[in-house]
Length: 388
Image (cartoon, rainbow, N blue to C red; front, side, top):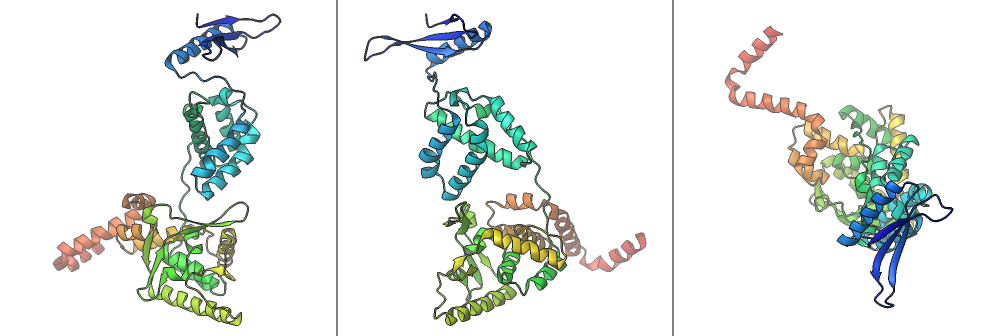
């Protein structure tokens, strides 16, 4: 007999007693007692399931480890040695701020899909975005998948939960006049060279803040993107490798950006000279007395200047979108835009900037028309005017 159901005197709950075979070291019979609730029918169903797990080798002996202890162990034993410092820092913040307070007291083996669903709903009701809650789901899923590999649970309950869907926010960009007006107002800001570079290259914030003088080629008018800067929760700055191999790239710079960066270098050299120092090729292009700039400080400065300029306030990351959109509107081939942005594929570029496609399509149609009907353009133009 592989198992039986009993009800102890004075208890409302049924208990499943599983026979696990003989202990090879003692020769004694091993048993596992599992509380199964107040319904005998449900207890029988659970016992049938457990016996099947025993027969298939997927049975996991119940453990009283709670989620709080497991997540802490997962962070130290898995996340820290296997993830990047930035990902580890982000995961630690989410686990301590959200997961442990809400799920920490639940035993790992007793975690159910409804617990996760309640956590997601609670997060949405508290104002978290659907995208953030989906990130929580991804974290929980990978943590529980590790528990499966470690033999602590026999299935990943996150597989049975659907995270909330989210709609991508509408992309905000500036037109040519807005860009020029913003830069005019930003001219007196210490961050003017940084913002100019952002708008004229489409580089990410972290890439801009990690840029060194050795990455700026004034001979061939190019910028080499090879790393990114991030600030952890404890204030520590770290330099990381690009998001993908395509993110490691060379960006041609325009004549105006060449002049802006050249002037910026002269100012940095003059400041260093006053301190009896020199500018090294390994120094950061955009810094505070040689130290990295705080990413959030840059973002706040961008938003303040945009508000002062009277243009719509967009994110600093939208300078990247603005750069791409304006290039595409000028008829620049999407492949070139993809390379400048460091997208992994041209399809990603086309999908991201599909809102620009109608204008590109129309321009392409007109160019094709002129190519094949160049001798009849005057006639076509006159007919269009007459029909309008």
